[in-house]
Image 1 (cartoon, rainbow, N blue to C red):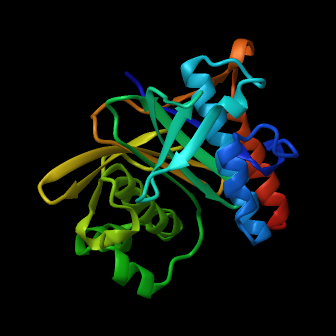
Image 2 (image 1 turned 60 degrees about the horizontal axis):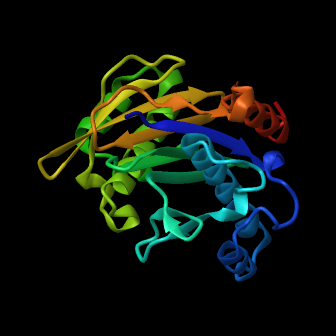
Image 3 (image 1 turned 180 degrees about the horizontal axis):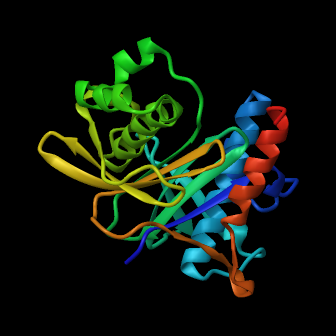
Length: 249
């Protein structure tokens, strides 16, 4: 059983609320701030597309039948036609893009999407452990910005896979990178209280994607969209282009 992934951006989200389940429409109506509403819609849209692709559900007519909820600790789960859907998922959004990792039952997932940006010395000191700081300091200057975000993102994904989220001290998670820095999925591991979690990361433009599964498997697989079989990883490329335009590149 494999873990799959999907990225969408703000321009992919359809207008209106007809594609949301009634409970999701109520949750959206309760959000006051426009940015929070936009991020929430983007995350829900990405999750629905990922779940429908994984489970082979009809779309778009079936989208309102797929409801993404959150448990009391904030972790997302899915119901289809009022019943628990046979999948696990994790959602993250950043800079007008959203990432969803999804897999059949039996997996425990976490994912994170970051915009690669400078991290302060205080941030590094507060959230990275000594071994991670040593890797950062020994790296070429051109790689340090990426590595600072990578260590943080790996911890975010691992904390979600553990079901602990932001309640966990990031310094309890120790990240070790398995492979050199390249433009494809690469491995890492995260140690936590005697456990070792396995994850994957990749860079796409200024975006950084990490996925952790408590199973040790191969790298995540990009989801295909419906019968057309078009790889939705192209949405990553589109999100990169649009974000680049916003940043003036």
